[in-house]
Amino acid sequence: MKKFALVAAPLALAASLAFAPTASAAPSDTPALGCVRVFNLDRPPLGLDIDAVKRVATLLGLPGVPNRLGMVCETPQQTDAEHGVVNYPRHGPIILRNIGSARLQEYCTDSVSEPGATAPLPGTDIITKGLVVFGSGCVTEPNPIAV
Image (cartoon, one colour):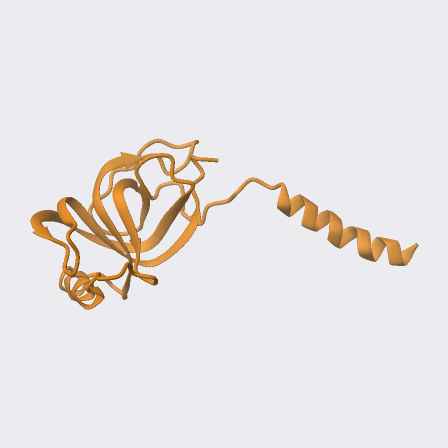
């Protein structure tokens, strides 16, 4: 009987975790922005001049090394289904999502932003006419709005 209890308890715990609602690391008051494109700089696309991106982020005052880059981030979104839209003050914690029904989001503990320009992003042909957001301390997590 004891052997059964030792096996049943971990299985019950595992089952409850598997069916638990997806939790977000982002606090409910974190601003969220929909972006035309979000880059994971831990795995940058070919041709992206990562050194140039780091230099710009440093000049803008981003604490830490940027590991996410949001391009044309003009669409404020809800953080989660229970709370409204929080305005982005152009720095601080941020959630970056690709516009549309993104299943995942990027939660960054810090960020800085800069209005885009008509010049392409260094090393690419991507024109950045909208807000460009540099994020550090970022992790990929499920988007609670898309669940």
